[in-house]
Amino acid sequence: MYPIHCANCAELVEAADTALYKSKSQGRNMVSVYDTELLEFVPKDNYKLCVLLQAHDLPTIEALSGAIDAKLNFSPGHSKSIGKLASATARKLGLSAADCAGIYLAALLRDLGQISISDTVINKKDNLSEEEMIALKEHSARGHAIIQKAPRMSAVLPAILHHHERYDGTGYPSGLAGEEIPLPARILAAADAYQSMISKRPHRPAKTEEEAREELIKNSGTQFDPKVVKEMLSVVSKRRANGSKKDYKAA
Image (cartoon, rainbow, N blue to C red):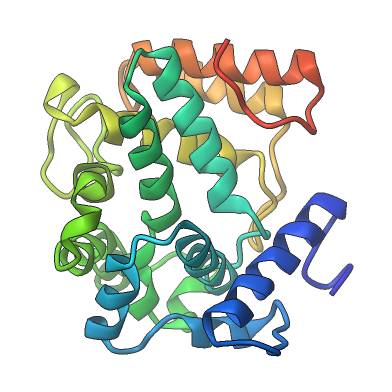
């Protein structure tokens, strides 16, 4: 409902789409509202969740992603925007259409492992305790473990597991560095960071696109792959030239 769940028309459409696909997944003549009830779309049982993922149905996965976004207090369409930026960057880097599609799916499911984290931790505005931080950092491995049980989703696994690695080797869960980190994970890490920076969060305001660009450049070679940052900023610049309401596209 505008303006409670959405800040603009685009977010309103995304919220409506998420609610629509939840209704479709449950049968005909169903009505859903974009709100905490969407979290009911995320199966509490991992087996049921794996069955949902194994169906490999994009609208269903996008609806699941929308429910996860709602739990994590992201605006409607947040993960889809990350996926579009990541897949456009992948195309710029010469990856195949199949690899680009896999990166888009990985973006939708990258935070699946956070569904088991309590709302208290997710909504906490103060610094997390050491125990809470450990639990949060385990989300990529938890998400990987769930998706691993859905063989048709195997292509997304490296990006899901390693999207919090850092180019200098100080990330998690494996402390991989440089090109040890799978390229899809390096792309997803930068796209996730950029899109999150330009998005308003409960604990901070959104950065401008220029501020986010500067952050990517500043952390190029330490947190992010310089090659990925270069091509991603090219994609972002093209979108700005075409109008910021347009989707990300490779040049």
